[in-house]
Structures are given as C-alpha cells and as structure tokens.
Amino acid sequence: MKLRFLGTGTSCGVPVIGCQCEVCTSTDPHDHRLRCSALVETSSTRLLIDCGPDFRQQVLPLKFRKIDAILVTHHHYDHVGGMDDLRPFCIFGDINIYADSTAAANIRHNMPYCFVEHKYPGVPNIRLIEVSAHESFTVGDLSITPFIVMHGRLPILAYRIESLTSHSVLVYITDMKTISPSEVPYARGADVMVINALRFTKAHHSHLLVDESLAFIREVSPTQALLVHSCHDIGLHSAVNARLPHPVRLAYDGEEIEVSPSCQTI
Ligand SMILES: [Zn+2]
Ligand SMILES: [Zn+2]
Ligand SMILES: [Zn+2]
Image (cartoon, rainbow, N blue to C red):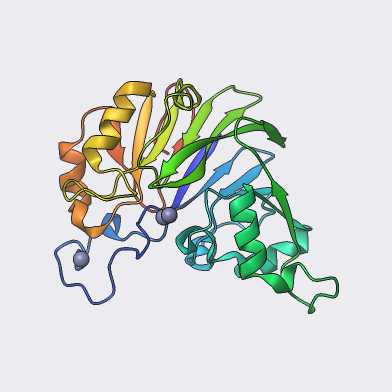
C-alpha cells in the first residue's frame, strides 16, 4: 500500500496569500503546502482522502486512472471544495464518495446539481455512500474502518485502512483536537499514522498543536508518524523536522511512502 501526500497545508494553504514571512517566501518546495489530501494506492485500488480546492492542481501530475473511492473526513471547504473537478474521472464510471451523514448532507447542499433527476450534461456523477463510525467496508483490496475524532465540537471521521493482502495498516487523522478514549483503539497498531499538527504555539480551539499531536502519537505508538495540516507558523520544513523526535516527521506535498512494517520513503 502506497501513500502519497497531495497536500499537507491548513485551510488557507502555504504560502498564505499576501504573507511575507520566511515560510511563505521560502524557495524550498517542502515549504509549499496545498490543502490537505492524500492518495492511497495498491496495484488494484486507488483511494482519495478528501477532495479540497487544490484537487485539480494535485492530480494533474499523476497518472490519469480511476479513483475507486473518495473518503471524506468532514465537510469543511478545504476538504471538499474540489469535488466539481472530479468530472473527468466520470469517464471511468460513477464516483463513489464515502462520508458521514453530516458531510453527505453538506455535499448534497453544496452540489445540488449532482443530485437532481435530470442532470445538466457533464456534471460529475456522484454516488454518495453514507458511512458510520466503526462499520468497516471494503474497497478493492482495502478494508476501511471510520472512527470519530473531535474537531473542536464537531465530530468528524478519521480512517483506519488495512491492506487485505499485506495487512499493513494506515491510520489517517486530520483536523483533530480531541478524541474520546473509546475511539483510541482504532488508532493503535498503525504502520503509518498521519495526524494533523497546526503549529508549535498559540493554542487553537479545533486543531492540535505539535506537542499535542506528539503526545497522542506516544499514546498509540505507530511505527511511523507524519504530521499534516500545518500552517506557516509551524516554521520551515527543515527546522521543524530537526525538532521532531523519531519516528515523527513533518510530511511534505508530493511525498510518497510505502506503508509496510519497515515503512520506506520512496
Ligand atoms: Zn481542514
Ligand atoms: Zn506566512
Ligand atoms: Zn476542518
């Protein structure tokens, strides 16, 4: 199972429009962060996690191939704002979008033209599939179990993804601030865990800071952990990585990882 980070930035992306800080003006491509999204691939299955406003730019460099499923974490614009750009992928058939009832209702509300009986020619053909926490489903050779994390006061979905062939496990958590003790077991035992970390200081009501993410990583002890959904305040990619303890790293856009017990960067 291969994981590719399509975007690792917070809701406004990095650089922030109009900002002249050292991160936003950095010439190191590791400091450029599109909105948060990831692609999970095996030889037969391709999953997209979230489909934000940078989706078009994120998929243009990739091989044009069917997306078997889109896993939505929640309905905030930085996670769903690119869905209209799924249109070209309808050449492979309807687009299966998995979301909880709140996110599904918001998608229907935001894209009503996709859900009417007589559709305008060319709109994306979306098949919206409502999922519930702890109810596993299978897409190709991947078993997926959603679980709940709290994004401030909003319950949203995180995903535990297990390869049915290699049994490697990826846990993908974004936009978390807290988690109920009853959900924690779903995050344990991952070969790779992806988790949000906004910045080092200035507490946020709905996002973890780096130290809070590190505490949770210690609690569930994945083989490897990568931080995403970071804003420009986190600092330069190289400086942040120098501060992070093994086996935690700050992910960067375009990074690819083989999710296996030995977890190599490709
Ligand atoms: Zn977000
Ligand atoms: Zn900046
Ligand atoms: Zn959010």
